Amino acid sequence: MNRKEMLRRLQAADFALKDAALFLDTHPEDEKALAYYHKTRAEVNEMTRRYEEVCGPLTAAGVQNKQYWDWIKEPWPWERTDV
Image (cartoon, rainbow, N blue to C red; front, side, top):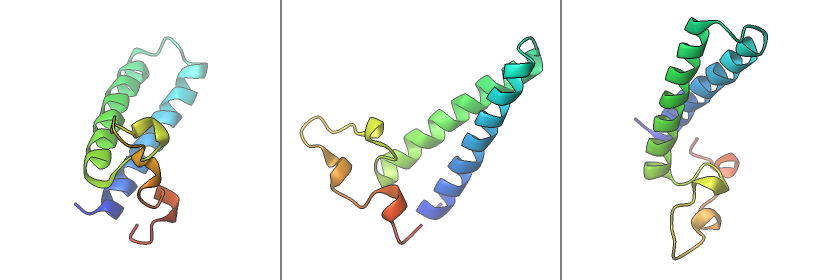
């Protein structure tokens, strides 16, 4: 899967996560919604990990390099032309 497709899928999953959180704000005791939120959160975390492993950090919080601040090494996600 290429960078563009990975990012598109991650954005869709992140949108679903935010939507579930908004639903839970008004339905905090909905067990199915809470289970969906946790499942989706795990998926977003895994997709983020895979994306950053292949393409580099999405945010400064994704920097893993302990020797060099590689956040500035590549174009930032919004500056990429191959996305």
